[in-house]
Image 1 (cartoon, rainbow, N blue to C red):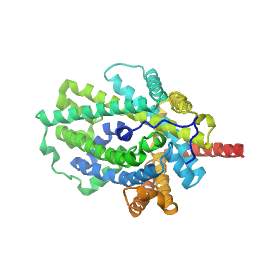
Image 2: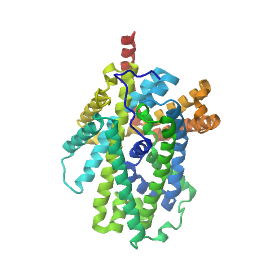
Image 3: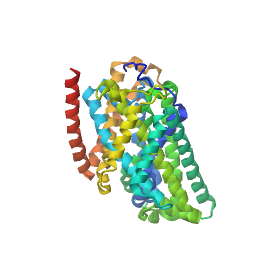
Image 4: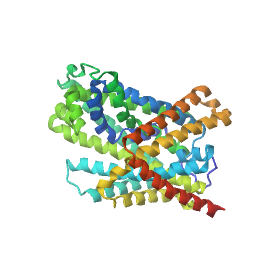
Length: 434
């Protein structure tokens, strides 16, 4: 990648546990509070098998990310890699689509977090959402070290809350082994049908690769961090899902609008709801922090390459954070508050840019292996293994995109219109550069 100048160089402060915290911080988000119940309604106790199967596509894609993040670390990686190894226009398209997706994600997560908090303490929705964005800006503006530490603290808090929930469920006399029989009430068909609902549980495991210029030792930490993130996520999901199934059974879990809250109420009584609200606050808060950081690094990378004005690549002389990009993310998220709440479902097209990003990174990994194989010599896995994983990951990303279009075509239309606007911006920037 192009060398960073003194004015655009970021500080390398993200260690191994920071890589894990950012990966889990994005993956262990709001989905766990809803997806497990919906999947239980389809697969019954087979939900546990569906969780494991759902991790497989992300496993192949994660190998491509681990490879690229190890041999070619860079900030704004999902923009930089396609820009360099596929086409500059492809990199721009990926990053442009993610602008819409990230704004929608921040608004939706802030809305959900505010609603959870309102279950315990009444708060005004829009002012509370704005306050959350202000806190995110503060955490990210003063350097990656502070943002990484915030992420670690929230991640540790969430894992502790889930540990308390699972321990209470296992020791409180409410565990019912009969709730796991039969294991496959709908056969393997039910398990497979539940998988699409659970794939989103693992989105974001690769997030730390977007901070490539800020990772202390990419060759030693990226691949290990991603592996630990996936293993931890699977373990947490299985433990929480098994506890919920044992406490309330698959029928109740599948019909519940708040499955974790219902299960926690059985295990902890009146303390169940506050515990779930705390878990939701930590899970959603760290997801927002990770998205804010990744979003700002994408804008930073686009400014550094010339796809956006160079101001976006400015780095604060003291804090070494991309402060202009961080402020831009804050402003975009704040503008998202002007949207009518009922329209936020349109921004659930978040998954479409994510899958396109996955596809392009897998293709980039293939291109690197074929054109610059020497770069891969220090990577833990063989060239053939990485090539096969990148190929499978790309195919799976396309298949999930096709399934998603059959489910609801409207997000695709919305993003298509946004991409047309981006094409105009890209063309204008190219003409300005020449």
